[in-house]
Length: 596
Image (cartoon, rainbow, N blue to C red; front, top):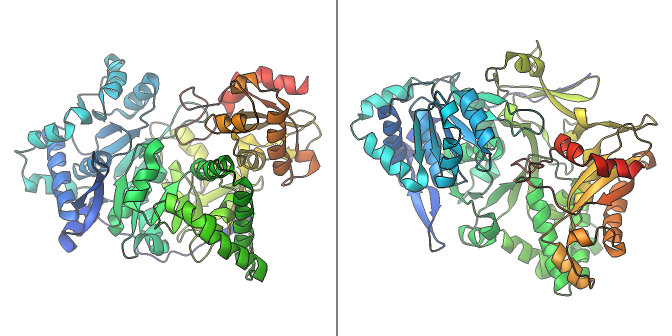
């Protein structure tokens, strides 16, 4: 049983809560810009540390006036916006705990989270969200308050709390300690009903005190800033939010993913965070645009050069020929790609799923180092992370200080550290299954640890396929590589108990029209699933993926599906992970056809 640990080097506060950061910032740097809020004309309005404390306090007083008690749960269902962060800290000032709900959640999902958490209040973004709450409100016996942001929730709460004194609010705020519940985050539910993960103020403090120090070049450099566009219901975005407040890093919010590039251009973040699918889409979109402009071959050469340059950096020596090509493409191609991220972006943080070493090398090769990390909701985000000065592309980095990793006999990754949650809400059985008697959290992921402590994720324990010939296959390796194709949206590798490995592939609906025009095709994807040229394009992606595995693990047969899998249809989680069990059930006939 292999084990590796990183010593604790940062002192974690033994008292207080996350609200102390807001109070300290206002006292030490009242005029420092903490947030930039998007305006209707495409600009940004600054919010200082003093402004933020005043707004948070006013809303928190409203929560007290509404009768919310210490320890109560308050839910938020909204897209990523400034008011989300404002409410989060106001809830903490009031001694309550935040229950985030993905804005795409269905009526039944919302009802389950509100009823299971016993939330006494919820803040919705708009009338649509409010309608989904009200549709099942007769079953929500604990819910007393419902406010809507687009209908003046912030002003309503501020007015409601006008009579609450500063002393009363401060007394409530100071009563919160490290072991108190900060948030109840429900897992996005790739399998079964979502479980509420209990994360304390100490879990966040442990994570952030270490992460901000370790990622000093992101958070503490002059002019550091980031534009947050991932859902704040996801722990990954939330931890960056808290990290920015702790380090006084300028933070902006964006919920308009389709118009993200213009916002990046005006905000000019120094670092961004995203899930791998976002990095894939940026690469694929650039590739498609280059091909449409007749510059596809130049882009392909530039991409290969960036990858070769990054790989050479890892080896410690860049050959003269690659260095010369890299300098040329820096002027012709890479600068434009960096400009698409705002022009000032030096680092990116990737989490939520494996990025793949090809994309990691590509981005580092163009001058944007993607720091891949690993963690779960249950671990307050990061357990491991690559650092600017300690990185191995293709790994998820080393355990952050104070964290230990162990490889179980069956290959499962186990972790122990102060960021590991206290358990699942109202579910002691699930808690006992997740955390063993020695305090090790069982991740459900399979991986490896090298001699320097860098962790590599090889698959999900429950998703390991065993072919009829007894070969163990980790589908994630193949799926990630197939998805690297600009034309592919999703890939599901199958073959458990079968004589060979197969795959179901969906086509990217944004990339398809340009490809169809270039190849003289007409019709929709559904009309061309058996088209020779389309199959040849997917076959090329499959062949590239198969280079990463042995012949016994390779994809022998695939089917192109007529429609993509989406979050709206229930096959993809809000964090863009494929719900394998759902797709397997819905596509059982297509899977059976692969082996008939």
